[in-house]
Image (cartoon, rainbow, N blue to C red):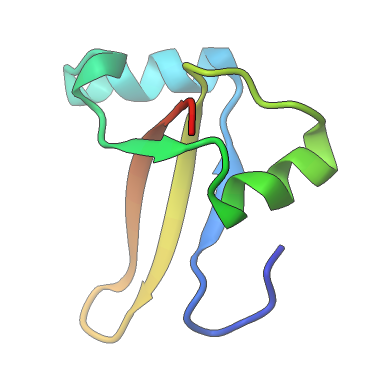
Length: 79
């Protein structure tokens, strides 16, 4: 991954995990905030997993002084 304190961790979710998370959050993929496939975090994931298709879901974990960590989900879109 990108090695810097200010860059959050990015994790590509399996389709099964993405469906489970969306169900728990009672959301559809279209309701998720977007992340473009030309984002630096996505490029790093592609170096690990290969091309990431539009419509995949990424978990982003940010460090937080007040909450320890904050987890967000993003939908990969064309960039």
